[in-house]
Length: 336
Ligand SMILES: NC(=O)c1ccc[n+]([C@@H]2O[C@H](COP(=O)([O-])OP(=O)(O)OC[C@H]3O[C@@H](n4cnc5c(N)ncnc54)[C@H](OP(=O)(O)O)[C@@H]3O)[C@@H](O)[C@H]2O)c1
Image 1 (cartoon, rainbow, N blue to C red):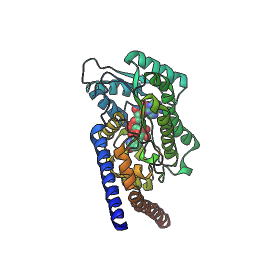
Image 2: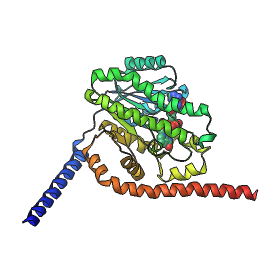
Image 3: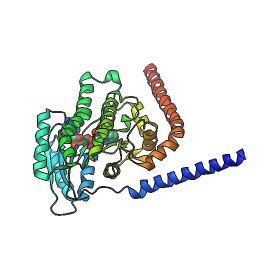
Image 4: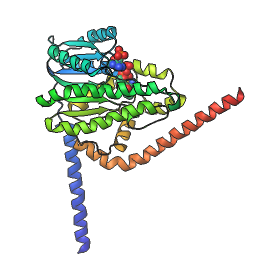
């Protein structure tokens, strides 16, 4: 009799779990309809190059008006002309504003006001402006450590601060932060950079909870190495260890990263990653991140243990790379 009850309970557990998984898959794949960008205003910091520029192109294809923010006016104008070519309707507008995201706050507020006057109330803010410097921590100047934080973190914080009240009033839209895989996992040579990208995750998590009752979404993207002018610049002085470790996740095109990011943001997902390593890292580092998809919750719940185990192989490999590079350097020094 006890056996029979036990068997029935087991069958019930399996059936309920299967229904939950199927429901999650259905919600994840079919029910999550992306919001439309037609006629909406999207502001993209760092929109003159790399991931930001390709994000602008994707938004243009989706019918949005776009404001591009960066410092160099020539590159901004070139990007404006290029993005406009992808507009899906003739009325679409693309404007550009030369601003340093780490500059004075009143300048940023003025830029947001001016952009909204030209292109209408803001629907989506994408904080893409940023840069990486790879170097051992003791070889990174204190000025560089402060600059990375000023651009990568404070730049995004300032722009988000300037747009939030208006967005809350309209109760639609969202904010995107472009962090990095280095914002989920600290690796050799990225101490100063990773800190600025980890900071974005904390900001985004808290903001997501503050903005949810206002129907606003927050998305954080954690891109792997992406083939952009910024990445080419970062590679110029990259320590061998950093290069070998970050290569593990592969090199992606900015088109792919931007497409995935926009899709996730329009579906209201909190975390946006690309590729298997991105998924693995995001699951292992999920913590108490907001739940924005039942499908993702199920994937995270069922794969967390095994992914943590797999991550130990990566960490072992990374530690071996660091030791090997040190041995090679020592050998070279002795032979000189
Ligand atoms: N490429 C990668 O492998 C990779 C991987 C992970 C994360 N990311 C992140 O993705 C974002 C975009 O990177 P990317 O590779 O596309 O870089 P990118 O090609 O160098 O583009 C960076 C953009 O940000 C702007 N920018 C930089 N500093 C600025 C400032 N102080 N004020 C205003 N605008 C500024 C640049 O224009 P101006 O210089 O004219 O201002 C440019 O439009 C960055 O946050 C980066 O950390 C990149």
